[in-house]
Length: 189
Image (cartoon, rainbow, N blue to C red):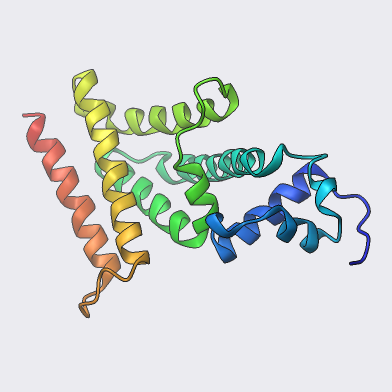
């Protein structure tokens, strides 16, 4: 293995994210990361606290990337268009970055304030998108959870090969999101 100089924490996490996206988060090892960077496994510990620390950093990276994309997608859009844009961002991010997405959907530890912040920010953006519907606070949280469940469930079923019929899956996803929006609007009357 060739020695790599100048491995930074950021570079290590970026490489780990690429490996997680390629091979799956559950298959990511410190040895893979070290090998890819041309360093020894103990050197990885200079940057992260083992696999749990690496998963935490990947969750933060995934959350940060997702937030940037969501913010760009929903700006200037009103409820229906914003929900559709937000759902599309989640859908495409989950499919384009399966390892980072898998890391980012795990609930962070209660005492991990940095990771908790990204979760709060995503919830706050979705709540802001839904605000014009004037949902009661509890119902707004139900709506956030519902939207997240729809997106995650669809992505996981699609990834597992659960949609075998020759009907366009993106059209099915769009139909599902539109139905969700209609349901929200109906519950607001």
